[in-house]
Image (cartoon, rainbow, N blue to C red):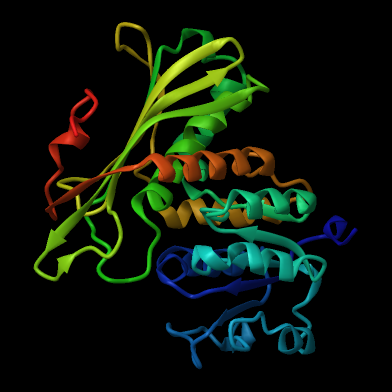
Length: 342
């Protein structure tokens, strides 16, 4: 199979949005300076690259996409198709499944940005390509999160001692009018992944049960955000014979930055956790380094990521809209530990 070849040469990045410009671009340049990767090709629907490239020795190039198709012919002519190339799919989520399918068999590995896809059926369809397709969840590759997963793997922290799980991902920055996924998929997806990842190294039968979901929008001088910007997910995680309640709270345009995962005892004492305030750039550098290894470990198996997609999709179906609130303020229903009254 093509995936058994060595990976140390080319990277093709599909999509050049904010995540690429703010984080992945920096990570790739750092790895190129260290000699871990060779050439990087960026592809998007724009006629020219939306950011300045480093063209010395042709380290970085840009290829416009053919309509909304991967420019396979042009990539192949330049020698950027094959076992020694990793494809990073960083396009809008609605195209993730299509591009993963289109790329299968043409690139050594296909790494798809979070969320994998918005459609559980499409996500399950990718399982047959699990030896080539890898889901990227950068919160799981932050140093504190990797250390947490390791403590669970070594059974320093035990599931049997956990009585409650909490995840917060609050950012002061807004989203403007750029295309984003709703808060549930944009940020809540991270919460489900980060809760699942440590538990799965101890339990082979970990599953979510979503109880309630609430979503709201911030409003600013520019008007209401085009997508939901804040969300709350309450539910339970089944792990072996345990049923553990969890709370996920996420939002853009919040009063302060707070990113953490906490595992609590019955009396509310912190048993273990992860501070997730490290930069996304460092996490993406670790992700790419992992993809270069003979047997990458992405935090969750593709089957488990598909379960996260299914859980997010169900959460979206039962979500209750909570209206608008001023940007820079946290709505009361998000901050309380009690379920909101609707």
